[in-house]
Length: 140
Ligand code: ADP
Ligand code: MG
Image (cartoon, rainbow, N blue to C red; front, side):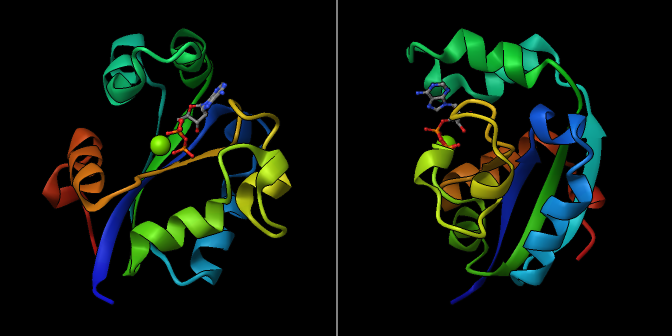
């Protein structure tokens, strides 16, 4: 398995409860290195662009409102098979279906306020990392 990078976002429900450190511990304990990280407040335009693939979904407007409701921590995670590994550490989208020990099982408030985002493919990871970070901001 090759070393990969993936884009992670600690969502507003988690930053509001000061869970950044606990989420990061899950990543680091799971073999992912945080090679870039910044805390930002997304604008509506940024959130709409980032979730553009979901534009036609019924929850799109609510998701954009949620993602702009407070600070997020955007980060690049690096490691062996990082894209799938991050998805495994996050758990299922709906916390009701997430496995024990996952971020979403332990921390998520709802299917929408589910504490973390992770890229779902190599193509998405490349695009999402470039959305938030310049190459010079990523320090392996
Ligand atoms: P994932 O984040 O697990 O890749 P999706 O890409 O399908 O999940 O959805 C993006 C985000 O949209 C989810 O993480 C969640 O915040 C929100 N979301 C997904 N499905 C729903 C839903 N049925 N109702 C409300 N929000 C949802
Ligand atoms: Mg997704």
